[in-house]
Amino acid sequence: AQSVAQPEDQVNVAEGNPLTVKCTYSVSGNPYLFWYVQYPNRGLQFLLKYITGDNLVKGSYGFEAEFNKSQTSFHLKKPSALVSDSALYFCAVSPDYKLSFGAGTTVTVRA
Amino acid sequence: GAVVSQHPSWVICKSGTSVKIECRSLDFQATTMFWYRQFPKQSLMLMATSNEGSKATYEQGVEKDKFLINHASLTLSTLTVTSAHPEDSSFYICSAPPGTSRNEQFFGPGTRLTVL
Image (cartoon, rainbow over all chains, first blue to last red; front, side, top):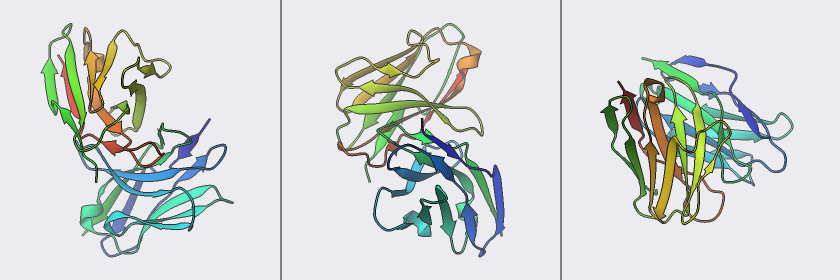
């Protein structure tokens, strides 16, 4: 069975500082990995995905993620965080059409 | 990107009544749609997979007679919460993957259900 772990419930950073949201996964076979962001009372918005190819994936709003097979990690990063990046972030893995989500990490960027 | 809509965005109902939530793919066809439930500040829990033209597939622990799913067309899936009770109050979100490959899913904006 597949699973995703987001070890941090909350991440707090100052605006302009680098932002990292951690994710590790467990899946048999080749992982399809995703990051989504959710703003209050809204659905999820797709940020980026890793399927195959380059381990560094660039996505929407300046976010990127690095796939590390040996560490089974897929951490989300942004070089310079904005206050508007404050939201709930979900990592997800998909061995088939279904998505398994991590518990989510609340990111707060202070001005 | 592809757009998925949900209606209504929020609904308040009395205990014992039924509520229908619609999920539509606006600019693509979806043979499969997914229904999730999300409690405050928690992750999404997959409830069921909606299959166009056939029965939905429910996840373990989800009552199929309580959460009726109908996927009547390639652009519409409905979730009906029957005989709703306060514990059914939650945020319900649908999603659909465009195409046949395992690409990203597109999510609806969610429906906030409050059962009094």
